Structures are given as C-alpha cells and as structure tokens.
Image 1: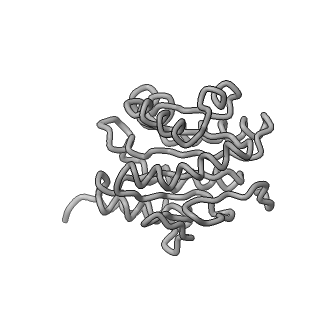
Image 2: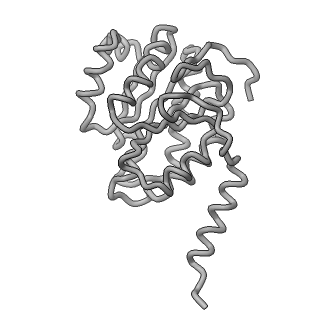
Length: 216
C-alpha cells in the first residue's frame, strides 16, 4: 500500500487523509451537488481523473451541473480526464449486479488511470442502482465492505452517494459501517463506526446463516 499522499484532496470542507472511501448521505440532489461539486472540480483543475457512475436518466442534468460549475465537459472527455459511466456499463452490466465483476472494474479503472499518468482519480458513485429491481443488488453492502481490500492499494478518493429519503434505515446503518469515512449534514468525518472488512464480512455470513437456519 502506498504510504504517500500525492495530492491534497478536499471534500466537504475538510482535507482528507488516507481514509478516502467515503459514504456521503444527502437529503436532496441540491445538497449532494453542493458538497461534491467542489471535490470534482478541484480534481479536474489539478489534472486528476474523474470517474462518475450515474443513472443514465440523470445524465443530462449531471452534465448541466458540471458545466455550471465551470467544467469544460467536452474537453475533459476528449482528454479522457472525465469518464461518465451509466449503471448499465458498471454495476448493472448484463442486467444484474455482480460484486466481484464490479470490484474488478474499479481495480482496472484506477490502475489504468495511474498507468496513463494521472496523479489521482476521484470516483463518485451514485448508489441508487441498488434500489433497482435487478438480480444481485442485495449484495450491495457486502460489496461496499469487500471493495475496501482493493481500494487500500490506491490513494484515489472514492465517494459513494446515498439519498437518505430512498434507502431504508437498516441499509443506511450497514452502509455507514463499511466506509472508513462519512459525510453527514455536509460535514466530512472519520467514521468511528467503521468495521474492517474481515470482521464485517464474517458478521454478514453469520447473519445469512441465521436467516437460512430452519426454525425450531
């Protein structure tokens, strides 16, 4: 694991350290963009790579907000500095979610960005794909825990956004527990509730075993 931080990363008013897998909880799109847009723009201004996983139905709105923030979207895409992937080309390829496939994709994207000479990548992932009626989406929390093994190899910053009005309380609590850092109320914090993946995945396995055990 790299021990140096090549570039300063600011998110939600804080300079963040190696705890760069962040779950960000918002109540509205306005709040979400208000917090993440400076993070996105700072990275592009520093010559870093931006990777966005979004709902294709929101692509036009997303591009509009980037342009409003002063980002030359066409130029950034031309230079391959900005890559916007719909869920269908990421989490929901072939109409289902496969956590191992998605982790491999993130590994490839971060590795290729580094190989192309980008000093850092900033990945923003809208997590509402997990609310779609697709096979495999119930593995979302397990995936969020397991991907920490891969992200530990990189200095890149990963921000997973959750709309609190759409996710259940139990899922929000689990999502909180698998991220080393969290944004709540627009403020970044190191997460005291973080559970390392070895421990969390074992807990998840025990939960599943308990559910599948025959009733006495």
